[in-house]
Image (cartoon, rainbow, N blue to C red):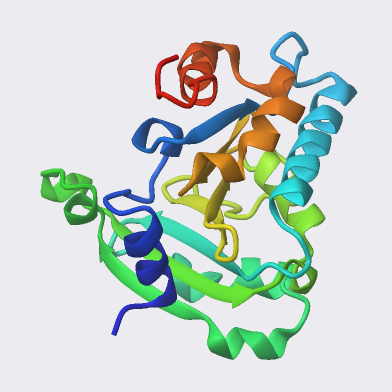
Length: 230
């Protein structure tokens, strides 16, 4: 039997490998710029803007009635003790009802096999993938999005504190609307859809937030006419 995440991806994003950078692995998708590159990260407004945009986009993608999957990948060396040290900290901190953690699912697999790459033994890594079915109201999502924005900074909210050899990615799946939301750090956010019409409103309403580097590719998808010619 497939896990809910496996079934969701197979039915709606067939062939997608859940790994950064998602935007370059799936169409249709939109890559948004979250922080202002003109601002120094020492500027107080740097994170204010990043957090505002992250929360705004999240609220547009997820409604309270939507069914979600909160997916967390921890990438670490097979010998790492990170799971013994802090196995569920993210879920304990940002999921309101701790009883729901009994529904948390875990898959562990080789990073090289998953990414279809051949890695030397010294570069071997394992992916520990947690997933929890929930709704938006079950999460302290404002605080979680802030923590993701600060992950590369020396900040109290940092999720993988003192574990420089390990990495973390947090994905939000909208099971109801067939969308994937990935705030990869303070710089940007990818939103993928099974059907481009489900995110056209984001393209139109938040067009100024689209990352200019990828704008031409995104425009080519959303500006096609009914005949499919851009």
